[in-house]
Amino acid sequence: MLADRGSTLVSHLSDCNRVVEVGVGNRPGVAAALADQGVDVTATDIRDRQTPDAVRFVRDDITDPDPRVYRDADAVYARHCPPELQRPARDAAQAAGARLLFTTLGGDPTLVDATRVTADDGTVFVADPNPSPGA
Image (cartoon, rainbow, N blue to C red):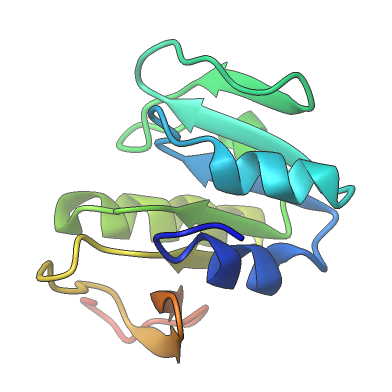
């Protein structure tokens, strides 16, 4: 189906009503697959990006997020999330009462409390909804 941990993300998010993708870039495949399954998807990026018609796009900077973008989301997710964006993404998800799922670029560390979920197509991290102080 989708390469690069996409199918694992889709399987973990397909039960959601509404999700927000942080930093969609030029990879809208997961957003499109979720929208095809009836999930309300908003994709964000700091630059204007093209997304499929079924995916709403909002220009947003996760380091200074607009809370309205994340409101009512069941989950926030990010593909190839660099370490410096993990805490801001977790904070935006927590402020919305949503869970955070993310993938990294292989060798990048995880800087937030997260559970590792390994599948045939890679690893997805699910951020702890109640991180320890300072995490």
